[in-house]
Length: 516
Image (cartoon, rainbow, N blue to C red; front, side, top):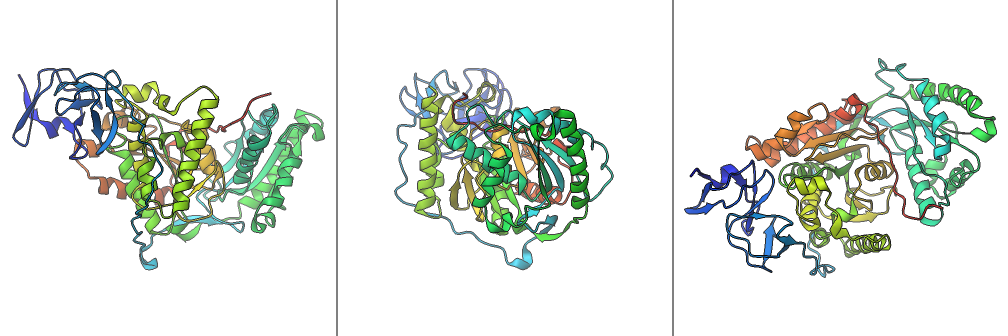
């Protein structure tokens, strides 16, 4: 019978927990010792999966992060595995937080706020990249939009001041989009058109779609005056029906983009305060280590950005469900707490209308990685937000207009969530992953942070930072958090993220209504 220290084989996150998370495979019959007590492993435990530290009776709560993650559905012996075969989520205690107790933010003196090299824009914000975008308003104009951008491929690889011409295409824009769907689409378009990473944009439409160029132009009247005054010259429009077909559309589009490129290439980076960082906090392909390593380390970096006067944005509403009480308790105001409860209840109704429940959220990859249910997943996911107070809640792709930590309503599906973050103004995104997700974004660098060393080395081409060193015991959360923060500054200043090197520039949108 082999014997080892519990701390060498597994991780206990909180002193109240009655489960530990295996660092690596723990064989049946292994004897684990901790603080003078011994625990016999009665079943083989896979990496990332949970082992009972004591016997858990049927109906008794299972604790991880010091919080209830579920109820045992049968007796679980000490040393046995704990997963969705013998535990169900427990969200019966969900309720609005009646009191808030925010921790005050310790802001750095302005003299101690670091800087990065960014593009200052007249229409607002600071860019971390300098693109010309060819934006399709509807799937029908996707092909000519791609052909126009393709004409400029490879032309600016050696230009230190210009990052290229990028097409942004999608499958939306018609099919009966009305109400909130069309409003949401307009928020996305405006978010791209006035993103600080976009020096100029050509909007390409078909001519008869729901989201036609007249609709896009009409939405300018609702925008801040600062944006309206910087439309002329840097935002141009073109339709296939107006141009006379695909070929003349491409020809005219290339001529227009040539002019826009010359405009964009005049911009230069300059030193700006880190308060201009607007960081998206995304996770995808999570495993049981996400809430132990990458997510809390990113939370440390989030706190550093907020202390500089910057902004961090937590998306993925269904992956807050079950952990919302912690964010609401730490909200800066009752309005912010109420805003979080509102979007969660709205999302519950949205899922129910489609025959779903938020309890169904964990994906097959999440389950294989050791996450048992949505509550456990959410308790780990919210750790990306750090410890600063929640300042406000925004709709999908709504422009973020305040500093500090905020939440944006979005699905848990990674790609449309990142698209919403970028449309809200994020100029850098950090994306934690335990299973390995390579996806990026067309106009904003997406830093990938691995939760475990095995996956990092297996997918090193796609991973920027290895937070698995926390699991390995070679670095602390603070050390990795500081490394993430410094890498954000470097990437904001122009260093390429792995998604940019490998060409991952995925883009997708969230659609709430029916397709007609």
